[in-house]
Image (cartoon, rainbow, N blue to C red; front, side):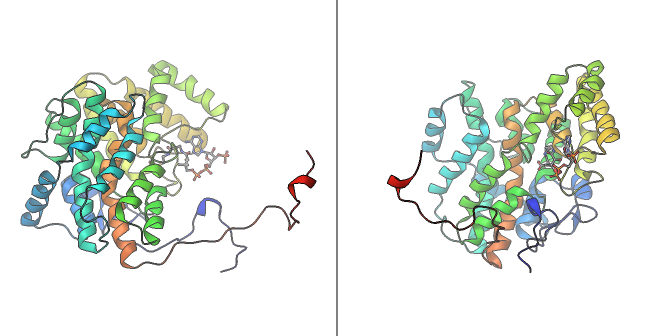
Length: 374
Ligand code: CMC
C-alpha cells in the first residue's frame, strides 16, 4: 500500500477482519439480526452469543446465569477504595479505576487462553454492575443492594442502583438497551481494545483502555450529553427555536450523526418505541415531543438521523437513573462485545501498528542550549 494513501480518522479503512458482528446492511451479532435479538433474546443470552460464538442451549444458558450470579461478589478492599474516591469524581472515571482494580484480584490475569479470557469476561459482566451500583449508592450515603439470584441481569442492575424492584416494562426496556449496546464492530473503543490486545497485553488492560475511549462525547459519552440537550431545551415549544439556533451557530447536537450509518441507526429506531411506551406509562411525554421536533429539524437541515445514544438517554431518565451512570451502563453491556473482540484478536494476532504521514519540520541541526536565542 502506498504511504501516500491517507484517510483522516481511518474513515472507510478496513482495519481488520471480524466474525463478531457486521454492520453492512442490517446490524448482526454473529449472524443474528439485532432486531430479532432485541425482540426475542435477553441480554445474558446475547452476551453468551458474543463470547461463545453460538446461542446457548437451555442448559448452557442456565449455567451461564449461575456463573454470573456466583461471580458477582467483589473483594471488600475494592468497596473500601470506592468509598475513598472523592465524591466529585464522575462515575465513568471511577468505573475505569474499579475495573483496573478487579484485575488485581483475578487469578487468571495473565492467562490469555481463549477459555481464561471467556472466564475473565464473564466475571467482568458480573462485577461491572456491582462497581457501578456500589459507587452510586456509597456516593448517596446508601447501603448496597445485593443481586437477586432469581432476578434478570437488567432487573438486578436497576434494583441494585435504584434500590427498588423495577416494573416488568422497565426491566424489558433496560434489557433491550443492553442488547443494543452490546456490540458494534470496529468503533473507537473496540478498536482501542484490539490495539492493546495486539501487543499481547491482557484482557483487563484492553477493557480499561476501551473504557477510556468510550468516555469521550463523540462516542459513548454522548448519551450523557444528550440528556443535557433535552434539559437545556426544556419545553416542547422551545424545541424548534432552540435547534434552529443551535444549527445556525454550528453547534454539534449530541445523539445525531454516525461515522458509518448515514441513513439511520437501526438501534435508535428500536429503542425509540421503548421510550414512547415508558413515557406514556409515566404520563409525561415532554421529552418525546422535544425529541420529535429535534429529529425532524436536524434531518431536514443537516440530513442527519439520530444514533442509539439519542433514545437511550431518555430511556435511562425514565428508568430513574442519574445522568452520570449512562455511559457506565453502556460499559456494563459493551464489555461483552469488547471481550469477544479481544478473544478474536488474540486468537489471530498481528501487531496493530500503522504508519503516519510526517508534516513536521524539515531536518534541522541540533543547537546547543547556550547558543539558542530567547
Ligand atoms: N450535529 C450537528 N452537525 C453534525 C453532527 C451533529 N451531531 N454530526 C455531524 N455533523 C456535521 C458536521 O458538522 C459536518 O458538517 P459540515 O460538513 O457542514 O462541516 C458533517 O456533519 C460531517 O461531520 P463529521 O464530524 O465529519 O462526521 P463524522 O462521520 O466524523 O461524525 C460523529 C460522526 C458521531 C463523530 C458525529 O456525527 C458527531 O459528533 N455526533 C455527535 C456525537 C454523538 O452523538 N456520538 C455518538 C456516536 S454513535 C454511538 C456511540 O458511539 O456511542
